[in-house]
Length: 104
Image 1 (cartoon, rainbow, N blue to C red):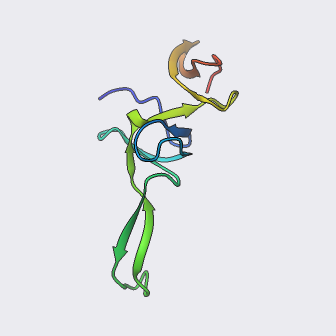
Image 2: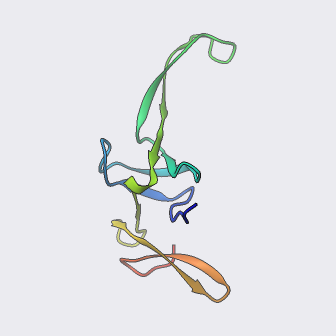
Image 3: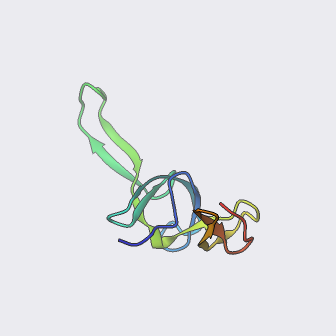
């Protein structure tokens, strides 16, 4: 398994695919499949039957997973897409932005 540099709660931009240019917050990361669910990106329609939870039924919109290689982290300082590096500071490993060299 590879070390993922995108974590839950990060703000990311889609850099490839149908949703290129979209931005959103990472809701969940699946390390085994190397996919992430991003808020408001890659929306799919799911048809649901009426049930106790949703007595109306109908079509529900929800986010689908997107490949992590198609995501780029947004640098909080410059608000642009950036690559992420990992370095050791003291006893801890920290993520940092390669554009602004700022700890994330």
